[in-house]
Amino acid sequence: MSEAVPTKKPESVLKEFFGYSEFRGNQRNIIQSVLSKRDTIVLMPTGGGKSVCYQVPAMVFEGLTLVISPLISLMKDQVDALNANGISAAFMNSTQSQSEQRFISSQIESGKIKLLYIAPERLYRGDYPLVDFLKTVNLSLVAIDEAHCVSQWGHDFRPEYLKIGELRRAFAKTPFIALTATADKLTRKDIAEKLGLKSPEWFVSSFDRSNITYRVTAKRDAMGKLLEFLDFHKKDSGVIYCLSRKNVEETAAELQAKGLSALPYHAGLPREEREKNQELFIKDEVKIMVATIAFGMGIDKSNVRFVVHMNMPQNIEGYYQETGRAGRDGLPSDALLFYSSQDAITLGRMLDQGDNQQFVDVMQDKLEKMKSFCQSKICRRKFLLNYFGEQHEGDCGNCDICFQKGKRQDMTIPSQMLLSAVVRLGESYGIGYVILVLRGSKSTKIQETHQQLSVYGIGKDRPESFWKNLCDKLMQEDYLAEAGSQFPTLKLTEFAWQKLKNKEKILLPMDDTLADVSNKPTEH
Ligand code: ADP
Ligand code: ZN
Image 1 (tube, helix red, strand yellow):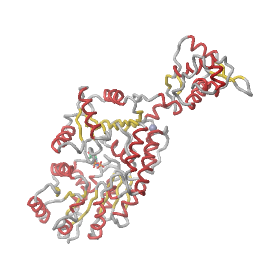
Image 2: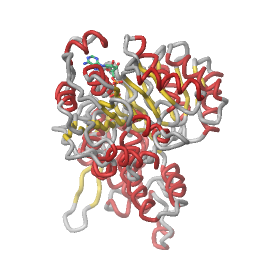
Image 3: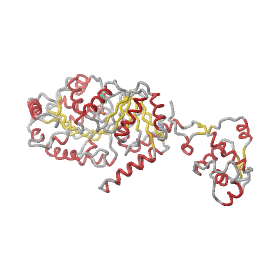
Image 4: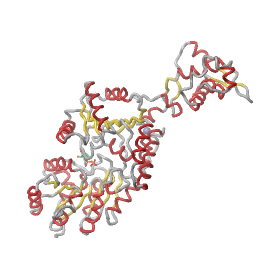
């Protein structure tokens, strides 16, 4: 095996083969680490430009760069794209005949191929495993794409990835670079360990995707809200994720019936149809891809303007990766998630069916975090980045939570209920008693004295906490005042009487405590 001595400059390779005049973010340092033959781990969000980090070194090194990737279906596209840029690349997988594979081997032997893409199972499988062949050629670099697949704590564990550790030991002098767009702390540790990397150099980019607007909304009337959202995104490309194949087909059919340009994608469709739909989407001939999460990994479509989740994903890693497919071109893009607690329960049950208890526990914990993301009233970006171990200074100003701050919402109807209950009770009771009446308390005392009131039970659909919070707001905004010190009773203010008389709307400051009545996506 000859020593690979770098001859070309990375900058000129970038310009010559990729047409870019400068490196982005950490790319230059990452490439330097690889060229100095250090094991390197790259954590970079989707769209950050990971491919260049091994493709440029591949062109600088003399020998072959092996790229291990889990997705056979995407290899052809990746290789075609490289070839179109004048980089000789090939892939080997089970869809090819023996003679095709022999031809590629001979091309590698004669040094005509710079990058070889394979799935991990190809390494050690068959009569003549690829690893034996690799020992006979000049292997300069091994790149492991989607490296989180090696970790069973990751959301996409692939046991074949564990074999890469063996490869690492077999090629002691060859640098390895592992890349992923998603890895929480547990998974990160696993990547270095399970791949057997030698004191790797870490490059962790900021995971912030500042051009993506995050929104979470209640699933009630999801289709209506979705149509409203899509109306806002007329002519834009986007992906709508559904949990089941059945949902994918139904949603796609419904959108088509509304005259929208949408196609389904899931693993149950015939291959030709799936590939055709994907291609139409990539070429912008179809705008909306309704899909299961089988769709999207590694797809390089830069102008995806929105990603919708009709169901809550199982964990934040998955959610972040999927939403990360929006806005790779850096332009403003939208991520919308429909949340229902029922979905969270369904996912929990699905997880419980696993037989490895430790694994089930970790996954349940991830699910809990996903749930709290949906329910939380903290800036979404802050929450997400914090999950990945990154701090975000202040709120982002570009998520539904941030949009809601300082806004007012129409609370006329529940406020009228509460105010009239106060009046009907002769302005001589405190909030506790008013709520009991509003919620139709079955206590004998209340039934005997106040059951006949028109306000009795009209507020039973909302929890006690809601009425308490509403009362607080109405006091803060000077609609209600308390009188008496030992047993404070509620009274309407002059201001409130005026508002009621003029039939004016009652707009109150929006916040988490009243959020259950405000689920419309915020327009911007
Ligand atoms: P990732 O694999 O991290 O999701 P890609 O490698 O697909 O990201 O790169 C995302 C996009 O950014 C691609 O369209 C790629 O061509 C582009 N890109 C990568 N590096 C640069 C660069 N240095 N300058 C400009 N564009 C770049
Ligand atoms: Zn925010």
